[in-house]
Image 1: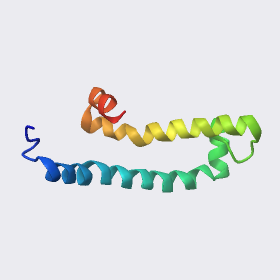
Image 2 (image 1 turned 180 degrees about the horizontal axis):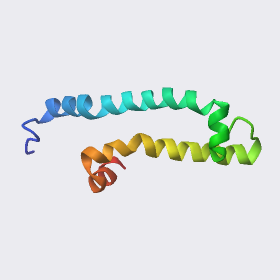
Image 3 (image 1 turned 120 degrees about the vertical axis):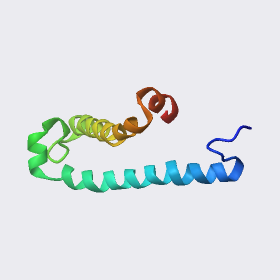
Length: 94
């Protein structure tokens, strides 16, 4: 196996863990903490009615929750494309 950045075996696994997995985990947790506070504000629900889960029920609440998840997932992952490029991000991340 050819070395990747001069690393092979366990050293490469540790580098991947520290340089890819740990920052992704921390970013995901930070995004959850920030967006959780925004989504519960009445002003946010009034400004973005398609993401309002505070005053809706049933199928509409389920749909709005899906819209929230898709939007915040995209916002959280978009900065990764700056470093990897669109093609590399799409082929390696999924």
